[in-house]
Image (cartoon, rainbow, N blue to C red):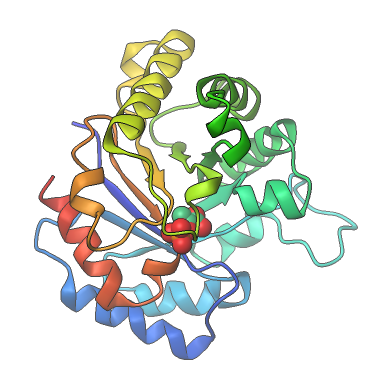
Amino acid sequence: MRRKLAAGNWKMNGTAASLTELEALKSSLPTNAPDVVICPPAPLLYRATQAAKETGIQIGAQDCHMQESGAFTGDVSASMIADTGATHVIVGHSERRDAHEERDRDVRKKAKTAWAAGLTAIICIGETLEDHEANNTLDIIAGQLAGSLPSAVTPTNTVIAYEPIWAIGTGKVPTLEQIVEVHDFIRERLTSRYGTEIADMIPLLYGGSVKPDNAATIFKAANVDGALVGGASLKAADFAPIITALSQS
Ligand code: PEP
């Protein structure tokens, strides 16, 4: 059985006061809750790992530098993230690919640096609206998988998040058929590159406007093992029903 995972990306939102949401989330979790990872902004990571003790919630970062250390003012390395007690790091989020011009090869290097620090990399891929409308989605996804994933992927060091860029923060969500098609395709590509044993166990997340009212439908897709959630992860009252829907899927 693949593990289910609900990951929350707080983006550039929250201060120390927001960490009370972790305790609130813990009290609202179902008994058979899937894995839950919250990714707050970097300055909150250490406090978040402390606040998450005894909650079962894991903490992740939103990005890491591709190098281990050095003269990279303002950047944060994977080992610094691990040192806070965090266990995961998102790499290749479309907002990083867009605003920081990160390319597949950068994402691949970041994933390897994350692994070297003992972190699980949540590797994001997804097509633009233009590519979606031109029916190029599967080609784009194939290219991003080939370019962003290192060869030493395992089910414990990697989670893949499919996030159509046009669905992030827009309230637009692909149809269930589209979600099924892309996740099935991702699983097939993983199988042809890494073999069934590895590919079958890698968690695939859907991300893009997941909300309490659409989560159950999205989780009907057999190859969707969870969600990467932005806006609706900020408040326990919104994130908890999504996690419950995942636990019931
Ligand atoms: C995200 O930022 O990864 C995301 C999916 O955001 P939202 O859920 O707000 O669309």
